[in-house]
Image (cartoon, rainbow, N blue to C red):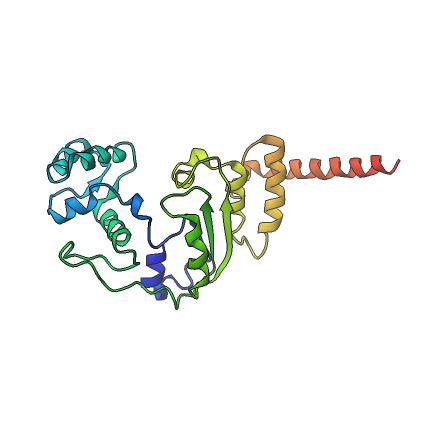
Length: 243
């Protein structure tokens, strides 16, 4: 998303209301470099997708140009959704040179490329959500990313977790209903209805343990009922405290 914002601002202007970035970073940590990506690219092996339908055969082909430790590390891709080898190469290159830059086609003979400039982007507001123990897009990185550019970052949230890092955002089972609600209601809905929907959603979450999707009309009556019940309970509590 950050790359797209830097390269296609005229196209994105007016089409996006707000960007909510989960685990944002422009330079992934070196320890998180995608295993095998640079070796496959440099050797010009015809493997173009990690975790695809033919990944078992593709991995054997990739292992012919990697060290045994890297070959074993590529088991990492076995149960993931398919991703482009080239996008992982780009990520690995930026990790290696510690710079947010264009893809280097002549890697490894050439390592430097044009830097990607985020300074002038101001077309829509952004919020960052980072995980406390993220080892790929490390949480400390978001503060300078927020402060040293002209990006309109209006909020920075740190999720304090029990050892879960980047996987917090990679697997939906780690995202709580309450947090889903926080993200969903950051988006302005019909000129300021977000705050009302958040209040309604919290009441629904408390009563049912589930997440209220404002776009799901079948839940509308239940959510409004939960909110009214919450207000009624609160009123009774105040009344009881007066006597």
